[in-house]
Every structure is written in structure tokens, then in C-alpha cells.
Length: 275
Ligand code: HEM
Image 1 (cartoon, rainbow, N blue to C red):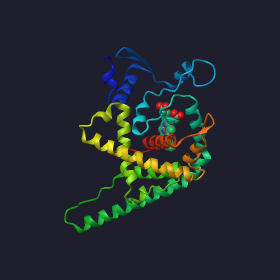
Image 2 (cartoon, rainbow, N blue to C red):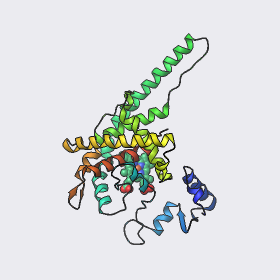
Image 3 (spheres, rainbow, N blue to C red):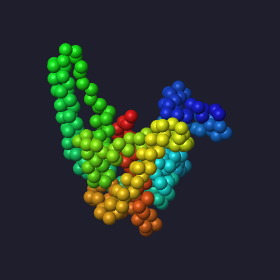
Image 4 (cartoon, rainbow, N blue to C red):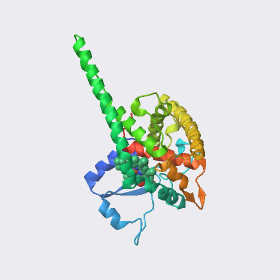
């Protein structure tokens, strides 16, 4: 087994980080019959392997994200999970302008507006809690879920940037899409750690995630049909993805769905926190 047990599960990445602290930026692990060399110093990495130019070429590793493909039907590669071939390149080139400084500057007023909306709600919750405490003989105080609020800001920003859609998370309106999306993200996180995660059907949380994944897939199908019929505003990632050409062909509906879901998950996972 070697270091398999150190690397499996949610703590895997932390265990490897702890080993890098202990053993330095270059060490090796034994995984069953394979040897894994861990190199964690960015400067050294650029010396031993490069993505472009002369020298040894290091291809994009897609093993880690590959299990994410199981979250949608049909299972297709996305920018996140595809190896660096023509498909990945076409999608990457199409989406890159969305991350230009000028495009990001465009989205800043929205981020500020959403943040202010959440701050106002927080203030109102604090004021209500203070009134409660004054009116009651026992001090009750109030709770405001900051993690939930952060995830609402993230999903609203992503909704606009990705699809030009107001997901209304920061309005705290009921949203089927958001209710589904959190178990979907949870399932994706688990799949990275354990590609067999969705096979554990005896677990109630896995059964819930499977139901949410199926519903999410259906909702995304509907969204993609609408996107193809009525392209979203030019600044959106979806509009750019519609311009991608792979061997001269645009992405089909399932490829578009896979990419939109990959961007939503990658953007959400890095900028928010979900339970
Ligand atoms: C602070 C925020 C973010 C951080 C720290 C971050 C970090 C990263 C890193 C380190 C990778 C490379 C992953 C790897 O190959 O192992 C990556 C890839 C990616 N990220 Fe982010 N990211 C952030 C925000 C976002 C957002 C907001 C989006 C979408 C709107 C996004 C979409 C993607 C996509 C699609 C890829 C795959 C790119 C490819 O393989 O060509 N990320 N990100």
C-alpha cells in the first residue's frame, strides 16, 4: 500500500503538505507499485519541467479532476479535466478574455453591490438581535451565517459572469438551483478524494447527492437549450464558450453544459466555502 492511506480522503492534501514541511520540497511517495515524486517548490518546478519553450515538457495532469466527469450525463471532458490537446486549447483560448483585467474591472461594481446588500442584511440581523435581547429577560443574541452569506455573493457573481443570470442568492429568495448546487459541489469534492464515492448508495448523503446531481443535470440541459437559442451578453463566459471552435466546430449542447458546470464549480470552490 505504501503511502496510499496518507493520501486518501479529505486530509490527503494536508498530509502531503505536512510531508513537504518535514522533508523539504522534493520527496517521493510509494503508491502500491508506483513511485510518486512530489516537487512543491515553484521555482524548481519551472527549472525541471516547462509548459512552453525548450526543455522537458510537463503535460497538464488531469488525474485529480478526472472523476469530476461523473457528475454530469453524459460524462465528458471539460477544460478542468481534459488533457492538454486541441479541445482543451480551444476552450481555454475562448474563455481567456473573460479573465482580462478590463473584464474583471467590469464585474467589480456588481461585487461591491452584492457585498453591500449582504452587509445591510447583517446589520439588520444585528439590530433585530439587539432588540430581542432588550425585550427579553435572558440575553438571546442572534446568529448570522457568514459562510452562507459569502457563498451567496459568490453564486450571484458567478451567475452573472457565467450566464448573465441573476441567481438571487443575496436576496435570500428560495432558489432550486442553489439548493441543488451545494450538494452537487459536495459530491464533486468527494469524487476527487474517492472516485467510487457515488457507489456508496447505502449512505443517505450519497443518495441525496445522486438525486441532486440528476436534477442539476436536467436543469443544466434546460439552461443550455435556452443559451443556444438566445446567447447571453457578450461579457459572459458562456458567450465566449459559444465562440469556441474545435476543429472548426462549435461546442455541442453537452460540451457547453460540461464547460459551464466546470467553470461554476471551479469558480465557486475557490472563492467560497460550502458546508
Ligand atoms: C481566488 C480564486 C481562484 C484561485 C486561487 C484559483 C486557482 C486555480 C488553480 C491553482 C488552478 C489550476 C488547477 C490545477 O491545474 O491543479 C485553476 C484552474 C482553473 N480555474 Fe481557478 N482559481 C480561482 C478562481 C477561479 C474562478 C472565479 C473561476 C471561474 C470563473 C476559475 C476557473 C478555473 C478553471 C476553468 C480552471 C481550469 C483551467 C485549465 O485547466 O486550463 N477559477 N484555478
